Image (cartoon, rainbow, N blue to C red; front, side, top):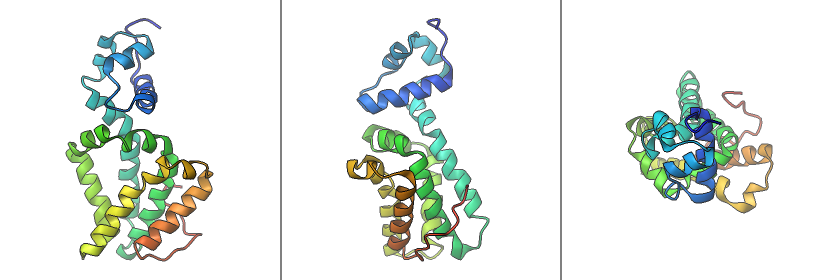
Length: 191
């Protein structure tokens, strides 16, 4: 590969691998360039900062959240929270590696909080889970569920679960935590 040729998709994939090995804070743009065999300028051509790389790595998960919310919001209010839990359980499995590598990293979390779009997306997630008249208990349960989605991705005991078992367990735990009916056969949005 020429020293100046680096497709954005390859940069993002390699960044995710390096984040897995070194963490976000421990990975530099120069490390990404070196790992790809390109110049740092080739990385800068697509991503001016490490923050931009982190946002690109997180983009598939956030796009999935937005699509899921759009789908869930087409349903009547009483069904939305359960449908969102089910869809988030599916996405937690689908993006298991991404969650385990990036979302548990303090540096990545700090970068994500600076994005107004991501903050608004999390507000939509929380508001859909809590409903229109959220009390303190509902807010705390939703926060525990949303932050808990990272747990299965980083817990070594859970890592051994197959995708179907993990999805079912997340759905069940989320529904119980939020006081929703625990229906194992409920349809999952986005499937």
